[in-house]
Image (tube, rainbow, N blue to C red; front, side, top):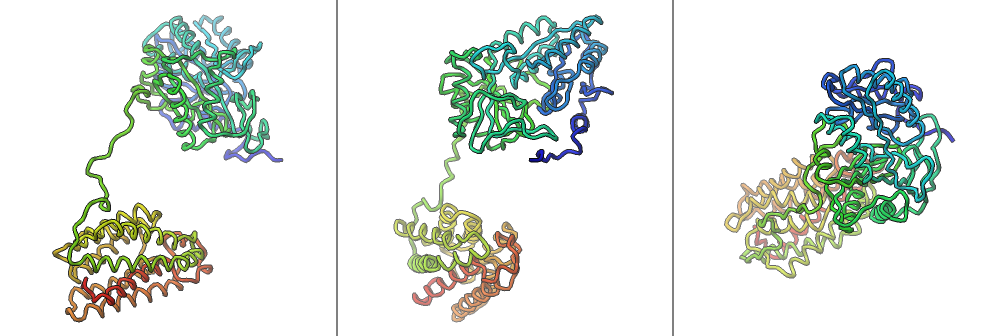
Length: 584
């Protein structure tokens, strides 16, 4: 088994190159020469204020370098991937902040042995040099039921502390005041993670194995084992399991949470969940908490403290009073902090009603007219033809598509038949075309539905009860075809329905000058042009639509969309010939 491929240049250089990438992409950051230390580039603004320093192993990006800026961290120290940073670099960062005129330096440290030792050693060395230093240990993991000597791990809840301490420091609070406030807040912070896959340090095999369809609850951000494995469930069930465990009073590490409590929620992507999955989990978290009577004050959802490419999520909850929310909402220049609203999530009206005048044409009542029987007969003939052609169109579509062209046309035909059973055909042809546009848009679906709806909508404005002669119908057909070309991006010769439609419409435009006695012959010629155009698609290479992704030599049958259009036009002709050509 080989290590997983990663998009890096080298295992040895990836951490330094990642830091360079972070700093070069942000005008507010700089690197401390000779160390894996990222500093705010405006250190002069720290004079007389408390500076904040955090850090840890790499692989958790955007933690911690992404949280540097006014209102958050002043510096961050990076170790190797999942490795604690060395004391010499931590000390160098402290001394740089002290030299910039900071009144004191607060170290925000996640509760891992290596971090405690290395940050603690650097803090003692700095104190010996006369620097006012204090340390806050973040240990908010809710995974383990029983206490251990090592204590609870520090996880994504750490960024809450970065934010609150940063806001206090920006206001000029003293070191003692900041330590007191964040220590108090930490009593109401809890985090729990779940993973669907392991992660792998560059150049190494995965840190653990997780069989397909299995998830691990309560694992750490370095791939440390969790508390239990179970089958992957739905997002709602997973989130409920997580929150149940986090707030279970029987557990030593639970977060006390009761109805009426106000919380900030952080839904943290551990690395490889899609944004869509994250949004589903976020919804589940908000609904689960509100279902328990908890007030969700703020929600942040995204990648905040990752574990390389681990497919998983952690939930962090922070009980929050008005003062905590004020500090949480304070502005920050940190590039990785999201642009959040300061409106309470719970209790907000988040559904907007559509405007009253957005009804559908097919739902309106219509009065018939002299043309209604002719148009009804033509429509019925079109629908029965498409239903007869269903299998033929599906077979043609299987050669160059997903084999459902006949099904989608049959869906449209059945929707029109059902509408005809319960509605009068309007005497105004334009209104009927608008009704048909609405029906195919709703019932046909896919790009075919959109194209037919475009055609019918654009055509509708050109035929009215007063203006419905042959020339008006020809102009309507032309307008519909032009709309298809403009929005669909295809042209004749691209092996689409346009190869049948465009030659027919070009012929129909002769109706604008044809004498009354010659109109049916123009229509017959147009139908023949459509049939010839559909047949010609056997020899064309698809340049638009789904068939354009199929190798040309594999497509030797006519285009199903073109065949469908030719069939529709022939059905209209047959209906008019049988009924005396009343539309003309």
